[in-house]
Image 1: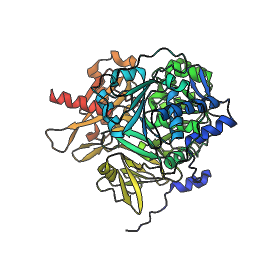
Image 2 (image 1 turned 45 degrees about the vertical axis):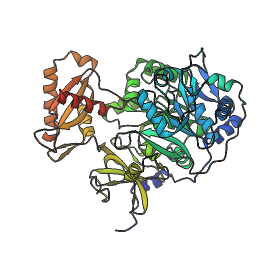
Image 3 (image 1 turned 135 degrees about the horizontal axis):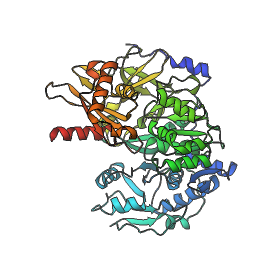
Image 4 (image 1 turned 30 degrees about the vertical axis):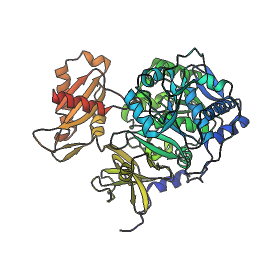
Length: 562
């Protein structure tokens, strides 16, 4: 077998659009903030409700936190956990940790106390910065914290807006400090330390391709390079952008938005609760966006809200949509709301650094997630061995080669070896996602490998069926999962979960099921037609707005057991 792969067809489109891979810039995040504290000192870096934090203030606040962390023994390479929602303290901490050369590790707020303890120990977190309510509900109820944890810093959501007195958790054998107390008398001076390109600056926990949380180790060079190459189709303009972030920062998409904004001297508007669409729309009315990013459900909720008509989208340059493409009438409706801005679908994963594929607004194919960004190679290979490249138009696993790939999974050598594999002389990340590529290099997602349903040897791609069902006006949201078919070993039963629109919830359930089955029989092969249809009040979503199929599979398994 030749060690050389044929050049990807997407390179022709790169040439057509005039984009080329840039040189590496290994300057850490703290360096950019220091520069902007001089060049655009009065520009807003963060907005939280009505509170604006300038780049001068962001630099000083991060310096104070860096000095406070030093007093707690944090230095080069130490891991600091960030158990925080979308509050300014998260962004301040990212900059402070960059300046120290410490490692940031997001600890997701929804985690149960045992899960928090496991991650603290697995990541070797030395100091944890936690929201006061989370510290009380998770940390205080633990018998003890892992030995690696030496200090906990507790902050209130409004510490930098309308601070109130905090009740610190009672923790044995651990120093516990209030954030404002730690930083109040700390020096506002601290210079970014020199860091090598392969420095691990972020450990981001992810379900990966097998579901069990693992810490993906992301390097300085990989992250800072990905920030640039991910936006070459619509480059950021330094000091002029207003971006919005509603994704939780413990998700790579939310964390990435902080990194992008600070890298380009942008103003980032924080939305602490993505479900509060009133607040989201009001903030966009007051601060017209130039950059938006979100998942399909978020865009749809904004478009459905009456206040969306009052938002000035005329300054919008780029609207990124992740998790799944938006197609059909939904896409037309959202792009109409955005005053003609083309939704730019994207595809990525934590292990990819994260962005891998973007749909160029100038050359968009709405049904796809786009083409590989400059410096990134994507191939579709057979699911069974991962060594045979599939012809254009045929489904297989998406694999990725990129300068931004993770260094590996922390403490998981076997998982790393399984996910990062050598092929044609390069390292490739095996995504666990199933897709096809067309002759121009556009990638079309079919499913997660674990969400693909096998019926008597035939493959059912859940996303394909869900997209078709979106054409039924009475369906608000749908999700397809497989459950074991006890009568046919190795085969699965197609289960459909349906959340009806508010107007349709008064319809006769039996008639709804009949209508769905008739529609499916007319629109798709018989093996794809759902055998069991569950009408539910609400389909569960993950914290970032994706359908939580793991929870649905657990529900289906419980129903079978009962």
